[in-house]
Structure formats: structure tokens, C-alpha cells
Length: 415
Image 1: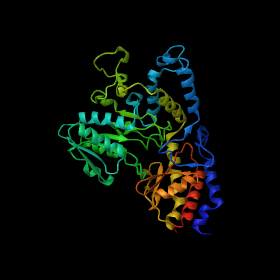
Image 2: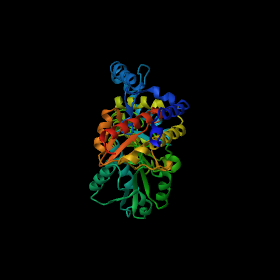
Image 3: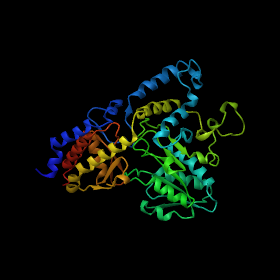
Image 4: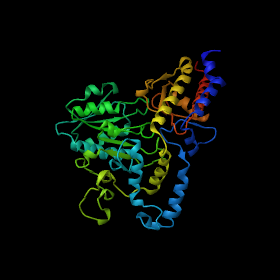
């Protein structure tokens, strides 16, 4: 029996099932709706539906909106929820997942809008002679677009300097105002050293903004421990808040007095219903909440975050690495036989919770995989991307997914 055959034998599956039987997070799978006949490996784009969410949305719609009407905005004996404080309650759930204090987190708007808020605040704080925004050349497009748009608004005062990830540290010079970096690359799954780069930037007087879109909920993040200045993330990937779920932002408490909320909406006011004509910021990160809370989407995210209440984030990270290690190992015979190139680091410290491969016909291959019920995704120009969510994935899922990939590649006749 060849190595290839041995890896795909039923005995290999049995060994992985034994590992799943010892998994301390195995019980979390029952808290999600996972369609039959599907191996879902795209939770890094849209998390699976937590079973608690539909009932919560029904209650908000039928009882809070339908029954209590406008009375649900404020706390009273009859209201099922206090909608006005819903952003703060959701922030308090997210805070421990990213190593922050609740008063350092604000929830609402989109990732792009929250990036604009943080970029504007950080550039205001930076020394005027510093004219460079340093970013990874392959950063997610919206991060680049928001920096370009704000710079245009400011008259083109700044240079958005895009350099390869390996050259970031060498470009931390006295000309740099801030770094705009995504901790986990959305295409390759490469994980940057958040703590190390933050420390090196701050040694040069550079402010840091971290995009945690592929970090929050996937593994432990410790913004406070790293001394990070600002961060942003989305609610619909590993936090499982649903399509278009609200984003969150983080502003270190030490900056609350110096990082202005330039999008100073009425819900960020210290007393919104005072209807004052001048903006007085609310305490803490609440000042960065702009408009009326989106109650339905915030409620969905609030319910989804309940699944993390009893989760040990260290165990989550250990399982993530075990799942991705298993996937890489099972894929090795396929990389030897087909034009697949692993682009995700093998080094645990440099890996997020996804594994990606280059393939010359990546888009066609992914289309065939999805038809067979293996749902990953394609990223231009040639990336096959597979996300692993430790809360609802098993090692047996990994085995079945690779079986599906093997079948699709064999049918393609690309040996």
C-alpha cells in the first residue's frame, strides 16, 4: 500500500475519529446548523448559523418590536431588551476574545467605516512631519481603499506605502505615521507577529491599526498584552454573526482622550437625548458608535457570541492547528501528483485558521468542489482557500473534505 493509499484508507479515518472523541470542544458542534451532505470550509467568509440565533431574532421581531414597539429602546419593567445599550453588551462579549476591556470596544457599522474612523483618529494623533501610512502590499482591498479615500480627502498629504510582508519591519522608519496591517492574510492564511510588529513600531513612535477580520474568534488575540493602539474586525466570519453582521473597533484606553471621533454621530454623544447642538463624546469607545443601533443584526451577533461563553481560547487554538496540520498532511500526496502549491506557512506561529493552495485552474476546481458539497472558496488569481472553524469542524470532516478534493482532481485528469 502506498503512502497515498494509506492516508485515505478507512483506518486513517478511524484514527481521526478517535482524536475527535477526545476533543474538548466537540460538544460545540451541536450548537450550529450544518446542512447534511456539506463539508463547510468557508467560515472565514461567512460563519455557520448558531442555532440560538433564529429564536432570538423571532423574539426581537415578535415581542420586542411587535409587542413593545418603541418601549424596547429603553430599559423598563416591560421591555424584553434595552436596545440603546445593545452595542455595549455586544462589545462586552467581543472584548475577551480580542484581549480588550469592554470600554475599549465599540460595535456597529461596517469594517470599512470603522477603518475610516480609526485612520482619521490615528493620523490626527501622528506627528505632522510623518507622512507615510505603511501597509502590506497584499492587504485586503477595503483597507487600501479606505486609506486612499481618506488621503484624497486630506489633499493627498500622505503616501500609502505598500511593501511585501517580509519587508515591513525594515520600513518602520521615522517617516511613518502609522501601520495598517491585517494579522492574517485573507488569501494565504499567513499570520503576522502582532505583538512583535506592534512593539517595533512603537519603538519608532509609530501608531498601529490591526485588522482582525480573520483573527477574532479563530484563535486568542491579546491586544492589551501587545500594547496595540487600534484594531478593527468583522462580526460575520469566525464570530458567526450572520451576513453583513456589524463590525467592531478597538481603541486602547490610553488613547480615549486623544483619538477624536470625527464621525461624531448622535449615538456616540454622552447624552443622545439631550439633543445638544455640540458633540460631547460618550465615555470610552462608545463615542465611536455613529448612528442608531441596527437592532436585528446586533441581536443576531449578540446571540451568536453566546457560543464562546464556555470556550477556552487556548483549546480553540490547539484544535485549529490540529485541524490545519491534518489537512496539510492529507493533502501532501495530492500536491505531489497535481499542480497544487501550498502557500500557507507550516510554522504554527505564522498560520491562522485556514489553508490555501495555488492551482492554475483554481476557480474551476473550486466550482467543482462546491458542486460536490465541499464548500471552500476561490481568491483571484489562483488561490483555493479552505477555512477551519474549531467550534464546528472535526478531524473526520477534514478527511472527508480531502477525499472530495481528491475525487475532483482525479475527474479533472490533471495528473
